[in-house]
Length: 375
Ligand code: GLA
Image (cartoon, rainbow, N blue to C red; front, side, top):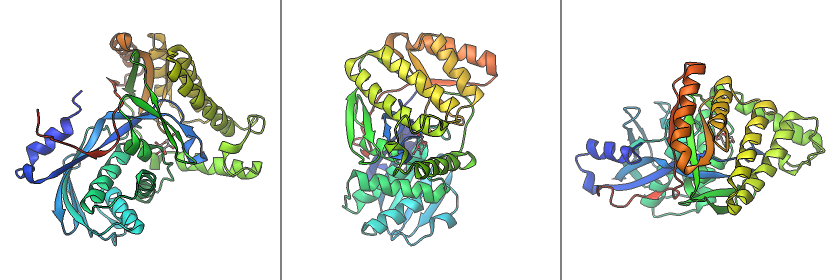
């Protein structure tokens, strides 16, 4: 893996590189706590060492050239473009951010930007949040304006929802903005309070792509969210965060949300104690709940979880929305490579899919990139 690949590609594509300012925003992997954020619950993600990088200089409009899409998008800096009408489609994320920041009061400073990303697309690692957040921090900085992390995260979340029509939660954007090197973030998605939880040095965090990509607008994500909101109304609580285990005992979706919130809090405690076995059991229970009660796993994700635990991981689970993409496994750092090798060989044999494993490190959240020309 080459975490600085995006920076190197931008550098190679720019003749006038010295005149630009650089920004980056990381993807995230969620250790535990999925499909809880939009019910006001708890999540435990970390910002990873794969980022979306942006090299910019001031301009009148907002013009972004993507080295990944090999395309350009240009919109007015005052947020007057309607994001849904912007082409190419990835430009809707950019236009959504420009519009939301204008609504919050950002002065209309434009930028000419070149963007490239190392966050795999359609993998459940928040590649679109990384693009939104990278644009948001660059645009805020160029306008010498700072609305604070919660407001920026919410603006980027709304931009995502506008661009895709998918009513996503706040986890991805907040993790990309607020990540802390060497830590996971325990986030209360109702208050947006964040508590960094140190990751033990012995912990290896292995991400494996199942070889099946997914897109949320083609998934039942919105339907699950609607069902959760409907159930909260039936139970007479503001959101499923407020339901008790007794109240949801016979509702699979509610059972998942309520039990997952408890697992997230227990996992943060296990991490703090350096108790990797307990962490692994919670991670396994999370996958079972997402698969059996919430219905967002796939045969490939189930197979991947199975082979990883069989190969010696303490625990493994789908990460992000599910329906394809990646799993995250927790294991001993020293055993991670051997586990990845054994498990991916077995997975390949079982599913004929090509898995991609990588070990990830927890990094700081989005911000300026200093000295990207240093080797
Ligand atoms: C996607 C959404 C998040 C969250 C996860 C599931 O990543 O963008 O808000 O709901 O799915 O936990």
